[in-house]
Image (spheres, rainbow, N blue to C red):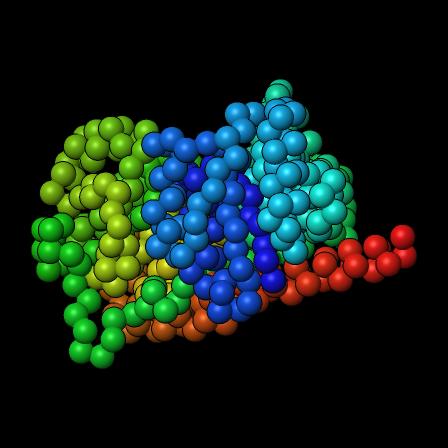
Length: 385
């Protein structure tokens, strides 16, 4: 089946990276992907391009500057007619608002995906979101990647009622890439990090306020009181970086909290970590990093917000904590660092859960089933007409 995937831009955000992830496995289940960015090429808006090329996908650009771009919309309709996909799948709000009506005008089924849990919006931002929800709901199918996401949008835009066209389809990660260390394979962290032999708790996240990393830092003195050789490894970059570094210095933690910046060797980092931590306080939908950690059989500590509980089963594959509660984070981390057998058991269970629910190939097969469903519905409608 030929699918035209339309996305706002080729940024390195969560939704965009997932499109590349899907590209790695789509051919295995019978999906041929054509990926189109509404925006044009630029250093900031093309950062995903190498990952797409690596996945065997040729990135294409439409060169649209804004949603209300009549010539751009006409170009999109012509592109759909020329490439003749079986389904058009739009990700993120601008793409849904433009590509789903364009698909209908070109006579093709359209599917739209929301990648976030609803957060408070106002003014023009709320208007754009409301328009995207309305357009997506009128399309052939609307996808939410977690139950929390669908529930939040139903509450805010549909008075709690869930339209029949709204589906939950969990994302997935490539579990042939994110794997535990093999027999006899070392599970050490990359040498350039220069860490000691003590236990390592790793946060892989953008350094943004909603990720709650400040609460992980606040919890760290308590962890050190029980495990003085432990290291908190923070992998990522963002606007909160300077403030977090000041917090670390103010707490006297410079020797035990390491900021590693952005890294491309996340698999090796995961495998070498004792625990993966995600202390978000809001805004999380279905965090890919928790799937990646589970794929590598790492136990996790994560806040019970958004769709995180779709991934992490508390006490079985990891430990859930209260959001924004440093004391709760410290208790969970100490519990895991105290107990090697518990970490091993939770990590093994996490890997099994990823195989059963969050394998990228399962995600691709579920999308293919939805594409066939909307395609068949469209054929029946055309026949009746």
